Image (cartoon, rainbow, N blue to C red; front, side, top):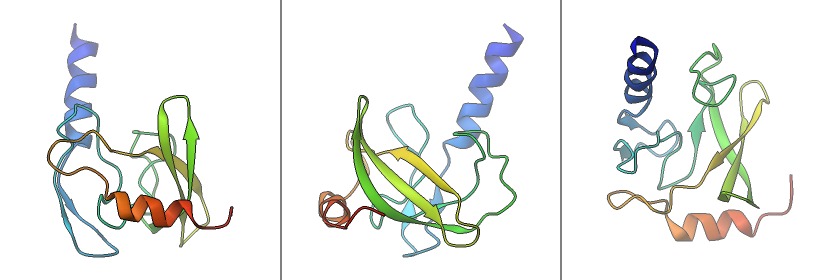
Length: 115
């Protein structure tokens, strides 16, 4: 039971509001139960994870959206850190009723050549 509570508390700590490093948008926590890891307006992220959700990266650099891919779980945004070059894949947040990812930004990202 204690381990479950720790995971739940940890998960809540990851799902927090933030200000986008790239465009300055105020980003609210995800309303779907998952944690938000990128700006829904410009799709930029921040290098805070070594593995998804661990918040263990010391870099903290801005991560540019460089590609849009489709996987078994839906659309995935590929990010590359502008500080260290680390790449990661983050599921697009299309189903959030409060602040879904901007369809125009996703469409523009899909038009980019593969990285």
